[in-house]
Amino acid sequence: MVEHQPTVMTVEEVAAYLRIPRSSVYKLAQEGRIPCQKAGRRWRFHREAIDRWLGNNPQSRELPK
Image (cartoon, rainbow, N blue to C red):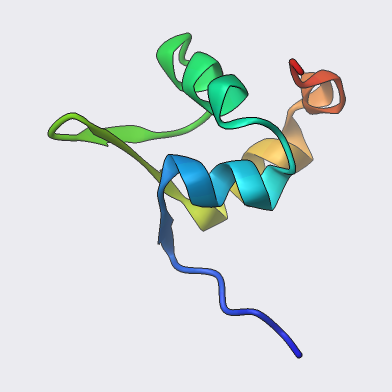
């Protein structure tokens, strides 16, 4: 069964998608190392931008733990 991925994801969804801790997603977002936007006090991530970032970012193989 294919699980539907939303177009705009939360920190929790991105962490699950990338299989990394939420704290790593927050750190990447705060440092501007992952494509994201803030909506109020919440981080939001476009799935297509995350996919492009993974494909274009040679450092993506070395995500923080």
